[in-house]
Length: 224
Image (cartoon, rainbow, N blue to C red):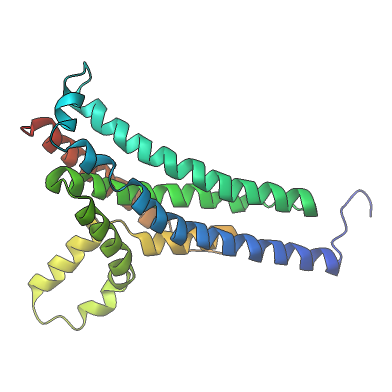
C-alpha cells in the first residue's frame, strides 16, 4: 500500500523459518566445519618439518617466514572455500527459492574464518615446536573442549582456593581462542539478536597474531 511492501502473516512466518534454517546451518558450519578442518589441515606444518622434506623446502630461494605463512594461508584457503561453498551456496539457494535475501546469514563466514584462524595459529605453534600432527590435533580439540569452561571463569573463581589458580585460569582464557563465545556471537549475528560485545572477536584475533608471531620466531631460528 502506497509503495510499501505488505508483510502478510504467511510471509513473516516464511522469513522466520528461513532464518531458523540458516541459523542451524551456520551453527553446523561453525562447529562441524572447524572440527573437520582441524583434521584436514593439522598435518600441513608437521609434515613440512619431516626430515628430508624440510631440507628440500629450505633449499628454495624463499624465506622461512614466507614458507610458514604459505602453510598458514593454505589452511585458511581450504577452510574458506569449504565455508563459502556451504554458507554462500545455501544462502543463494534459499534466497532464490523463497525471494527472501537474508544478508546477516553471511556473517557466519566471517565468524567461522576468525575462529579457525585463531585455532590454526595455535596449531601452527604446536606443529613447529613438536613436529607432531597428533599433538596439534589434540591441542586444537582441547581448546574446543575447554572453551565453554573458560567462558564461565567468573563463576569458577569463587571456588578457587589460591590466587595462583586465578592467574592461571585468567591467563589461559586470554591466550586461547575463545571459540565458545565466538560460536555464540555467530548464532546471535545470524539470528539478528543482541550479544555481549565484540571483545571475544578482537581478543582472539590479537592472541592468535602473537601466537603466530612466536611460532614464526621459533621456525626462523630453528636448526634443521
